[in-house]
Image (tube, rainbow over all chains, first blue to last red; front, side):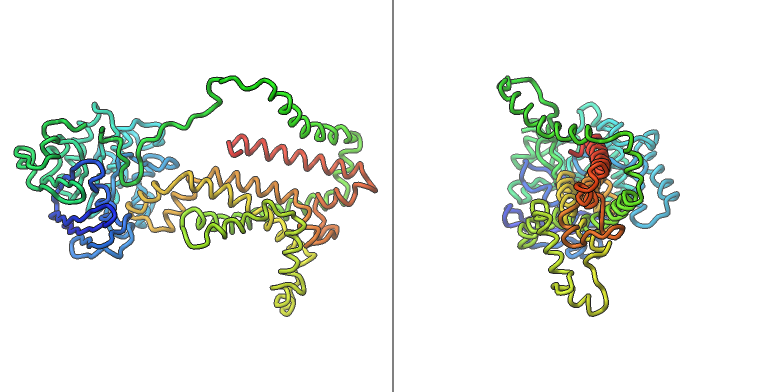
Length: 232
Length: 280
């Protein structure tokens, strides 16, 4: 696990953010739609090029590193399981991509599926499982990449409300000792998963602090609405 | 505003399911039936006419005559080779067109798709002035002892020239439809661009590649104009089935009709295959 240092300027979107995440820490990124949260994840993962900035993971400077070499996995709102591969092959994708022989990759995949409680789905096709199950498998697939940093972009937003607590519990275990940034609009997510909360409005950080502090004594407009439950 | 409605980083905002089928009727003007039936008959009647003209008693003998078998075999060989060439060249071209943007890309796309609408005989002439003895590249090739025109290789080149756009247009469409979301996920899972291409991009456009290849194969099999211009009409060397049909149509109409029927059957099979895969 490595620490993250991010500085990103995207002029067109009015984004100017500096963010540090300690090794093993989970930070919840929150703020109104269009505030630039997803763009920041894009800059960190290398899918989006900032006008100016720096991404440092541990002691590696990643500005010129392509996404596949960053060691940063991204879990999106939709599970995006590869539809042509079985659940097991989906989870084995990252190990296979880094050259692990098929059998070992499958063993690794089975272990990660077990970790998220989805081992019984191994032989199924992504089209044959529910949305909650698919997101569980997507978590296993991201973990199997053994990322130094895990990014989660509203991982529960497209799920039915009744399956969220179970996935939240899964993520809680998975993120316990991992460096992670999670974008969320849900105070419950922040409370369960994050050590620290960072609120972004209009491309700038307007509030940050330990999760309890921000949720107990919110300062920014968005944080107040988040806690009072008027968001969603 | 509900949080789930915002598109996330990979552009995965929920889409409404693509509507399929005709849906409730809003009352099509009834008179459309008449020109529609006329159009269908215009295509179907000639097909029936040529099928009726086939002499069933002599059909087996006609399509197994040495010259017919020679043409059939040549057609199959060249069409398979050309289709393979189309795949080999067309997959990279489609990917570059669908996944990158560069100055003049629109122009390149238009030019590459030109053989779709160009008279094949013009394509043949263009090839002749490229690879012919006095052609742009042919002069140099001639110096090292390579002569392309009027060989089986010329047949393959002519077929590839006219069929490549069919593959490119259907594969580029498939690539655009499948989008880059899965590719982005694969990259963040540590897969290099080549791995992503092989294990994600290509499998996802498999159906598009298959239908494009089938269309290209059919176009190769039916190629006439470019072939006769660039490769000539030498039995066993460049005289494919369509050329044979043209050659025989006056002297031996029965043989020409029998060979035509074989081509019609192949075409029907191709359309059936492509429709089955929802390609057309």
